[in-house]
Image (cartoon, rainbow, N blue to C red; front, side, top):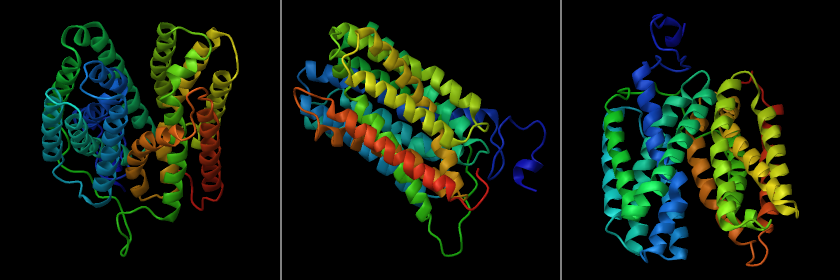
Length: 395
């Protein structure tokens, strides 16, 4: 009998595969600190663009600042997942949230290289907070459902943050208004961390095994890297791809916003079908959806079709990632690979745009669509091989 089986009936509505189930408050706090860690992701273009307009950052500096923060965050998440014991979680959460709030506050007075250095510093506590959330998700019986809830909650918070930035903060306070908001969100992470579980149950490993994933686990992470990098590569070029169809800058921006808003029902659908649909089915449908959107972006279709493509891409963007976790569990029942999945997605967010930059020209950006299509095919192929060669009952 597992700890989850022996839990009293009044325990919360989450079933754990490892260790006792968290209380509802612990569950809320665990998801909450993940939302804090990912809050900037949806606001990068607005905030860093404002820094450029104020002369505090160059156009090239955006890439260094955003890419550096994403890379450091990925490394921190991966390193903590591999070697740090899951104890003193409240202390880790409070400390990371305080450092994050300090880095966000410091950015308000920074220029040039100072912005780049402080954003790299912010990546460390963001990675730690995401490690905490992934640690909870990886130990549940239906991790895809809780991953979907995390991604959907993050998207909703980012949409709200973007609205507040556009309507009030940037207009009256400039970029500093945005980074002040980020600092306040970091302090909210301190309060949330006080309600985290004290520790997570250790994940199983063999007598001579390290905390690193097994060989098949690395192949699963490679599949995640390919799929996520494909989406990230196209994502940074959505605005110019929309403008290729004759849309004005305002209309193209509205189309990109449609993509962001459409992510919410995508995440909701993922939570609804979690535990009912196999990950390979979701990956295949997602790849078909992305490829359909890419085809619209590439062809000289009417401007209204761009809005449809953006909506389709937005739904799929949050439908697919929650199912990365059950794939990693199918190939590695110890869930050590699952703990690393978040770090790989962050790494893909930096590497995808970098690879795209090597193929995109000033006059024709359609090369990114060919790159993304190839990456999707590789990722889907690796996923299929892993699924059909599995030697145990799928998770």
